[in-house]
Image (tube, rainbow, N blue to C red):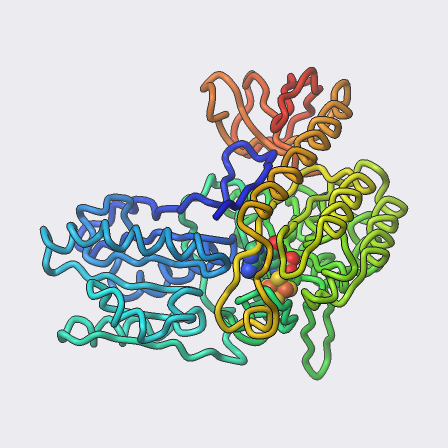
Length: 468
Ligand code: SAM
Ligand code: SF4
């Protein structure tokens, strides 16, 4: 199974697992947590680490010293699940050398497979779904007393609003904040509504407080996370918030705090959100707007509830309100059930019309239990899926190169996120459009904002120098 992404963020790779950091707390039990999949999962692992800290665990990046290993899993495509299976078999040897080691599986794959996991993977002690993390201390007690433990209850209310996440793998500059959980959209290919349950929005005051706390601790950028942030809604007797209102509330914390968000849904992104982005310089000019296909027929079968024309109208509005410089990226699935060469050509032509800055491209992977798996035939051959995904990847490469070339000679305000991976002499940071720029460090430090003149580029990265 191929899942390809063309990214501008040099250190980002959606196919890589993230591992917990060393906390060096003496006298505590050690938790090693490995997270797969989307940013929501990484944010959830930070909630889990927080819940377990109050129960005597500190995190480690060293598997050998762990008392508890948790894999926070993804079920979005079959290859994501296969990766977890392979990882679990490799953990067998750790269990052999340390028979007291407990192994737990969290997240979407745990939710999808439930108790079946315990039958299929004998070394697993604990299976916990995304809404049951508060129960971890009790479940661990059960495991300590020699039993296997499972909680895959999906809630209609849980948002973990009161839990202050422990930042794992943080650069100390940017952090993720979950603003909602679950999804009500029922795209026919997608397992998320079944593994993460119904959509619910988190109290805006707790989101604000979390962002403010991060800012006071020196963080300079927050990314508001949800499967469909544009359908954020929260109300009490006296207040009502939609996503535009929430964005504004967080942006007002300080002009020095950058605000990003992901993921937007084409059917829900409003002009009000676009005008809010325009109003505040610290809300980044970048929108991740998954298209999934350029063919209205396929979009209908996917139950995306918009057409090609609707999608292009939204892009037109983005350009009209935010200008040509607003960064736009996409997700695209090729080889969905019944997709013809004509449908595929429409996807390529949509890409030509928009010229995205970058994108995440996948070929369709049938997920058990989804409407597509129940009602449609996964009838595009693997060979065609692979060819089509390569064609859209090639197209995106050309477009990313065009977009990057257009940045040459321009000056951008860049937030320094840390050292460049390739050279200690360089810093890497992102501009307003979320493009990664690498430049010589000079006398600046991580977390500073600098103006960078772009001199050249590769297909994935802009290269420049600080203009003092
Ligand atoms: N909520 C987001 C949205 O609707 O745009 C996306 C969430 S999903 C975690 C990320 C991406 O995975 C989707 O946008 C889609 O492109 C891809 N995806 C989801 N289900 C898939 C499947 N069954 N096969 C291949 N790709 C899939
Ligand atoms: Fe899945 Fe669609 Fe919800 Fe995104 S909006 S999580 S693709 S069901």
